[in-house]
Picture (cartoon, rainbow, N blue to C red):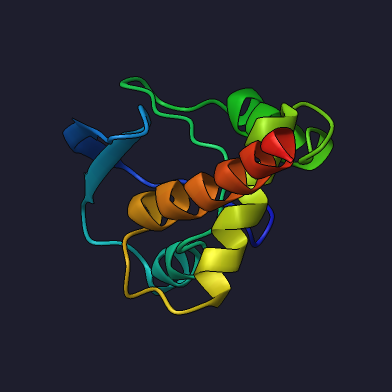
Length: 122
């Protein structure tokens, strides 16, 4: 298992829809090992792949997720708009995060849209 992967027992505690149509999923766990907690904290605010199963996760399933995250890098399977949103997220993440990403994203995208609309009127 790579250092960027962590498998642990837990359960979905809460699911909520966000204004952009995505989901926020809250997961509760049993007490975890220090290694598992370190891996989880290292993944904070980073995109990744998720596999949730009410059954056990087989070695083959875990390997499939690892292959997917390694082989399906950004730019190879994501649409241009998905790639742009991911880049914009990284800009927000590296800047001042006082404003929620969704609000920040919508505000900045409106600026970009208005800039291009102005070119049409010119």
